[in-house]
Amino acid sequence: MDNVSTYPTAQDTVGDTNIHAFRTGVGSRHVPYGPKPRQKLDIYRPKDGEVKATILYLYGGGWVSGARWYYRLFGRMMASRGYTVVVPDYHLYPHATFPAFVEDGARAFKWMHDHAAELGGNSSRLFVMGHSAGAHIAALLALDPKYLNAHGLATSAIKGVIGLAGPYTIDPLKWKGIKDIFASSRETPHGARPIKLVRPGAPPMLLLHGSRDRVVGSHASVYLASALEGAGSKADTKIYPRIGHFEIFAAYLWGWRWRASVLKDTEDFIAAH
Image 1 (cartoon, helix red, strand yellow):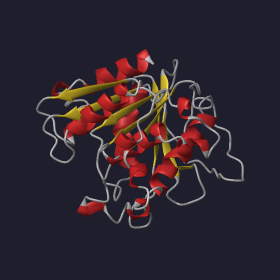
Image 2 (image 1 turned 60 degrees about the horizontal axis):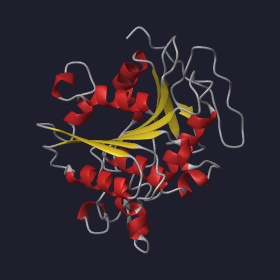
Image 3 (image 1 turned 180 degrees about the vertical axis):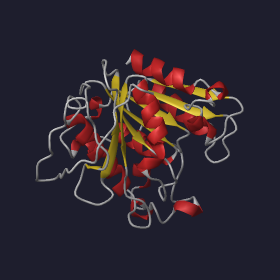
């Protein structure tokens, strides 16, 4: 992975203040994309060569756990293959409830859009990728225009969504474990359900799932893809045999790739869009 740049800590601020310019060929860790402590991101980018695409990666953790530094190995691996990867933290329950984490995702995407050229990429080649709860957030960013509209962007700014084991069909007000997280959606519950927000003209989606997922059934990806196609949007589903909820992400990493072709399928999807 020698084709990956090493990042110093940025002394950046955001909001109404300025962001220091990136030096050529250098990215950063701990870069603020908003004024709050959890609104920071890490960047992984190739040292040289053309950036194939810039990817916002939203991690999972049931909306209650997770940290961007867990994904350093994934970010470096993708950077070594020619992608710039932006991994933001976002607000988690109980410190925040829906839709705060989706709003964080939109703010991080806006930051990535505005700085794509400085990161060696192009604002016309921006993708959103997420696992589990992160895939749920990614789908909402693509399907509900209000989140990006709040930052002056249309959902068409997302050229594609790669969702891993996302709970796209879940009714959060009926699942005991997450009712409190989504309590604010009680009056408009469909606003938290990607399957209910399907529309024509949505960004293309690649929905990946393991057949042995016991956390989020693979039907969630199948049903969302079917609904999107029925509405006239583009979606593809790949269900991998003998893969569970966590293995589907691990299969991107060296030593696990024999388990499922997630990396190849992701790269093919990005190249096609």
